[in-house]
Length: 262
Image (cartoon, rainbow, N blue to C red; front, side, top):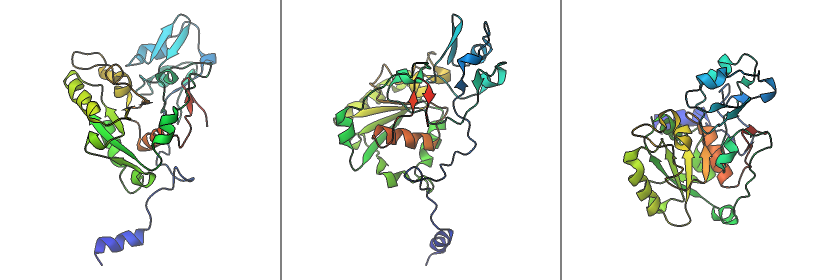
């Protein structure tokens, strides 16, 4: 018996039972999207908006507008807020089907019913083609962790494929630089129908820090039709797994109108 095999048997099973069963998701103590509490806002205060590097928080009259699709989870707003209107949270899983659900709303946001084709299309497996459209490699680092022994994405019937011709879902990271427009479209065009697109990371959702500069766009939207949005800088492996399971209709969407429900 090889020595590494012996060590593996002695170490036991490393894969977490989460999310199929209760267990460790690997994100204990991780800070998530700041929680907005409008009742605590002080009139005329714009401290959080003034420090936000991506304009995820903007003043709108006497109120604030909060767009979690632009948030890079820097926590600056929670540090400068004098009244506790912006507070830290552990809400790191922010996957949604509609871009509108990343905009904070006191009405509960957009409630989209999953299309019957989507709910029936994936009974056994999902194959993903990943395209890096100009990211900093932060999201790529988290994606690589999905295949390690702890998360073991394959156990859920979800696989990455090197060819778009065998892919069901195009997973895009990065703000979609001008140089990547055509390669990204070519990958999408090579996919068989039915096909879907997932924007992973704040850069892919809205452009992030680099949005709208001379070399970058404002994310995947407007270049390709997007079916799933997952902001974060970067979103952690557990957040990506949960968003994929939500896409497969195996777990419900928890974020509505920028608010998360347990």
